[in-house]
Length: 357
Ligand code: AOF
Ligand code: ZN
Image 1 (cartoon, protein in one colour):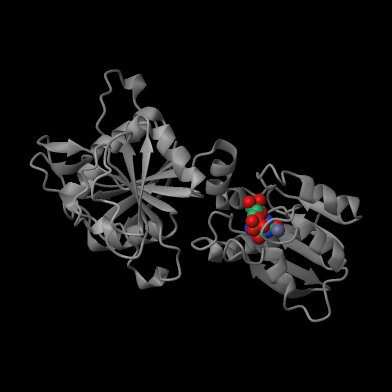
Image 2 (image 1 turned 30 degrees about the vertical axis):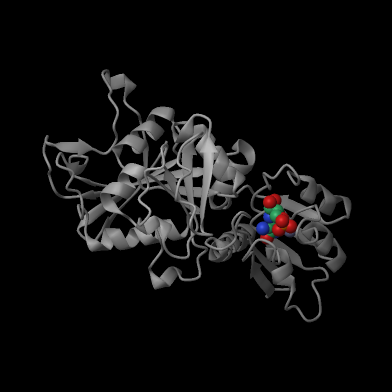
């Protein structure tokens, strides 16, 4: 191992992030090929079904990658899927050494890519970089737990309210915070909300910032037990796909008027949050964003089904005649739902907290 291995791998992680908004359901992956002090090629995985990072990095090397060192943020795959096995491609290219930042959690790979390379006489080092694991956290959740990485987004007053008791809620946080939400929408594979929010706020749940024009439009998911989504709701319009989740026996009338709108029925309806998340995982969602009111946020917290929370906090006080961000009751302090603060940043006049469980 060399001191520079880590630096190259961190660069691979950065490269991989370029594919983050387009590569789902596949994980983002970045690859750098190096020989005799020169970077020969670099590549990232852009879209499922198209070239893997390693293949894209090899593509433009004129005299081949013989004896080269390959840095890659994820273990090279060992199976022929939509594309040929990268481990075999690297063996065929005659590379000397492969440095991997994370093992592929896909049970079809799970170490077998590394094994293939070693059996072919290639030196392989696995560094297990935290940033590389974080990069694929959604993919890992889906592949190993059959549910996506669940990220809650809320915008509250300083005292944790999302609205006044009379329902007035628009623009608690400022325009910079609202613009920042576009990033989290763009990197999500689905945006989930409840029908109550659809009726009250009529959100479009789309990515509109031109900076993310290249992003795959996230699936809009409405938890709507009894089919109450108004037929003229914004979430049913536009190019982005929408999924309505109903209870068995409800919600069939008059909504499936567009090729972009699909309906799914769960036996216990959307209150079966495990069922909802399993359905989204089934549809290839690695990361989902919950943009919902207190009822849904409360249910997710009570069920312990969130991974990350992006909390925008405005320096405003709404007082007691207002609605808490999460509809739940805690009677004993030790029973409080505990989160871990991982990042804080000021965005415009507001604060953005990133929390993990
Ligand atoms: C790699 N390099 O750049 C990526 C990998 O359906 P396929 O053929 O595209 O294969 C997808 C699987 O390949 C995916 O589930 C994951 O295990 C691995 N992703 N592997 O060697 C890459 N994106
Ligand atoms: Zn591959």
